[in-house]
Image 1 (cartoon, one colour):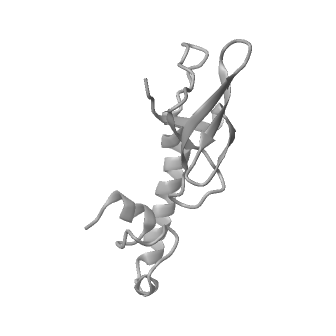
Image 2: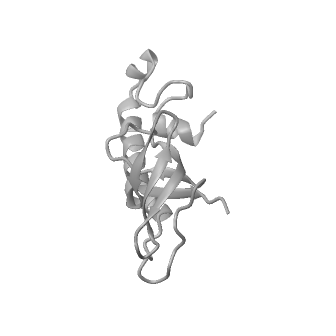
Length: 126
């Protein structure tokens, strides 16, 4: 079955990590072109679609601050294909203008501070 995940990973086996291919993939003639297309798709997703999740209209209209309990994507430039960490906001830190500039996020492995410019809001908990 062909899924969006199989287009991104270049394989039909969804239980393999994104950058590991089965031995039969090496012998396919179109493997390299399919891998190139998957890389191009991933690059466009990172450069064109992901920034759309983070609205850039901060000077035109006020947007809401991140709050405790919000689900976010952490924008990382050095992660592997398909490995964008999802995190939960556990604490917020506002400046003197009452605008949240830094938050403490918790991932599956750790908890640390992150600037809000490196986060994309996925789900808001009201």
